[in-house]
Structure formats: C-alpha cells, structure tokens
Amino acid sequence: MARLLRVSAVNLALGYVFLSICVLTLFATPLWYAWRESIEEGRAALIEDDARRLADVFQTQGAQGLAAAIDAQVGRRLAGGQIILFADASLSRLAGNLPSWPPGVPESPGPHNLSIDLGGSSMQTVLMRSFLPGGYNLLVGRDVARFRTLEAFFWYGLAGAAGIVLLVGVLGGLLVRRALLSEVQGISQTASAIVKGNLSQRLPTPGGADEFDMLAQTLNRMLDQIEHLIHGVRNVSNAIAHDLRTPLAELRSRLEELSLTHPSPEETFAEVDAAVADVDRVLGIFNALLRLAEIDTGARYSGFVQVDVAKVASEAAEFYQPVAELKGVRLSFESSGELTVAGDPLLLAQAIGNLIDNALKYARENGTITVEVVQQQPDGVIGIAVSDDGPGIPDEEKPKVTERFYRGDASRGTPGAGLGLSLVAAVAKLHGGSLQLRDNHPGLRATLILVPGIGPGGGPLAVAAGASFAGG
Image (cartoon, rainbow, N blue to C red; front, top):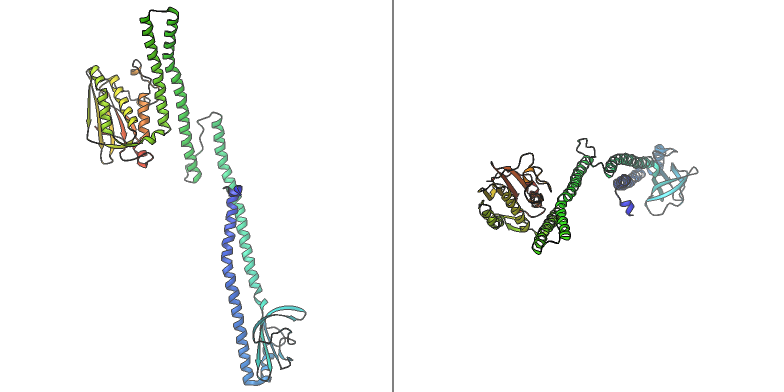
C-alpha cells in the first residue's frame, strides 16, 4: 500500500485514468437512467395512444371495421416495431401482424413485458391488453429491440471514451516518466560530480519558469551555500592551525626552558604566568569559535526577549570608559531615546563590546570614539554605530574583515585572533540585520543594523540584512 501511495509518473497516470473513468461513470449513469426512463415512458404512451385510437375505431365501425383498419395499417408484417392483434372472445385471430394470440399474456389490462415467439425467433416486447365490448380482445405492443442500436452506440461510445482515456493516461505517464527521468538524471549527475569533489558543479538552468527550473535554482543556491561553508571550514581549519601554533609553541618553549634551566622561583612564576596567558589565548580562540558555531546553528533564538538597545550600548560604552581613559581616548555615547528590538541581550552586548574594543585598538592617541544609537525613519531600522579616527580599513579589505581569522596589514601587530568582527557579523545575521563598514574620514564607522519589533523567523528581518543605514 505504501508503495502504491508514492508519487511517481506511473502512479500519476493510473490516478488520472481512474479519476477519468470515475468521471465518465458519473456522467454516463444518470444519462443512461434518463434514457431508459424516457424510452419506457415514451413507449408506454405510444402503446396507450394506439390502443385508444383502435378502440375508437371499434366504437364507430364495429368489429369488421376495426379488422379492416388493422389489416390496412400493418398487413402481415411488423411496422416500425409495432405489434397489433385483434381477436374474438375465444382469442382467435381476426386481424393483426401476429399469427396467433401469444401464450402467457396476462388477463389483467395494462402494459406487460413479454417474450413472444415469432417465426422461430424470440422477441422482447411490451404488450397492452384491452377488452372491447362483445368479448373482443385487442393486443397492442412494441418491439423493445427497436432502440437497441442506439443503446449499442451509447455503450460503444462510452467504451471508446474509456479506451481513449486509458491510452492517453498510459502514453502521458510514459512521457512524464521520461521527462522526470531526464531531469532526475541531470540532478544525479551533478550530485555525483559533487560527491567526487567538484564543488563548483551546478544544475543547468535554461531560464524558464517551470517547476524544474525553480527546483534547479533552489538547489544551486543551496550548493553555493554548501560550497561557501566548506571553503569556510577549510579556511577556519587552516587559520586555527596557524593561530594556535604560535601560543602553543611559546607555551612549549617556556615549559621546556623551565625544565632544562631550573631558574629561580621568581623567574619560574613569571614564566608560569606567561604560560597561563598563552593558554588563555588558546581558550579565548576556542570560546569565540564555540560562540560562532552556536550562533550559526540558531540555538540562541531561545534567548530572544525585548531588548532596549540604547541601554545595552550605553552600558557597553560605560564598561570600556576606563580603558579609553588609560589610552587617552575620548569615548562618547549618543542616543535618540529608548529603542527596543527582539534579540539576545548577551550577544548584542558582546557584539557592541567587540566594536568598541576594535575601535580602541586602532584609535590614535588623544583620538575620539563615538557610540551612537539612532533610528532611521520611516522603516524604523535601528543602527548602532561605533566611529573612530584611526587608520580605517581599505575598501578592498572591507568584505574580508568579517571572515574568521582574517587579519589585515594594519592588524598584524595588534593582539587578537581575527574573530571580533566575525562574531559581530554573525550576531547581526542572527537578528536579521547586517554589519556595515564605511569610511569615517578619517577612521572607520562600523554600524550594526537591527529591526525593531520582530522576533526570530519574522519575514521583515530578512529584508533588513541587505538594508543600507545612513544614520548618524
């Protein structure tokens, strides 16, 4: 049963044939019933008219006049399936086209279905017996085989229609199956090429608007994303190996030196502290990667609540204020009031903190960092912008700095693993927004874009990801 319920070209063809035959049956059944009823009623009316007309002749012309009229009308043959027999009280034939009174005719008047023998062959008839004055008997009837040719044509037409439906269903099923197999073969060849390692292989898209073109376009977008993710995993793996090698090599060198030289306790504790710092760097990289993986899977949707973005940004700026003062940087905060979005407050705080920390790394001495939270009208998009007056990021590097472990030329000598902006971009994507990087003339203006009043999975969030924010 489960196999029969599976969708395939053969099952679709069988379903089409079955449905079409059911439609033909529903059409033919009432038509056949109406035909039969009309024929029966019409035949009975004709027999009654014939019997009444002949009875009137008997009343006006008598028995001899009726016999002459009947012989003149039908002679010795059946006229259009009409049956007439006039007999006396002893049922002896006086006139008509039957040789004798047929046996089995009921005594009661009215129409009766009866099979009579005529010349050695059986005939199905409808007969009406009438009693005339003087004991005379009148038998009027019709041959029911008169309309059998029309009935045969009806059944032949119905059978021909069913045969055409069956033929079209079978041929259509074969053609559809051939077309489906052709499309599936193209998908299978593409999948086989990808399995063999050719990730650039894509399904052909002729540019039409049918279902298979839509499916091919969707699969190609999925393959693009898979290729992007796989390349990302490869790049991350290479970057992890590169960025972890340095702290681990330093840690091994310190421990090996302690093992060989046995320095004084003060030097030993100093090296131990440095080793702990190296381990903290490694743990920091792994924690950042774990957070990014958690964000990518969408597991943080469960922590979405209504968040006052201005308050979160204000607290982040206040947290980094001592660090800015130590570096001689003026850190200011501006907001247009309470602005609420649906999001994860911890991730938003960390993303804003990463932007401020990134600005503090590159801000010039006695420079300025501005944190702004503004709302763009009329769509209500909220922008959290962190601006500095440092060296900025070249235009050719802006698309790359959100890649994990990417570090530009200006960041080679600064601490970090190249995951800060990657995490900010991931948090923005989780909230349906985006991270925009623009020149501040001088410096960089990094804007985290969010949409208020929409929870995870909302439609408008996807629109915000590509929006352009001009606040500030």
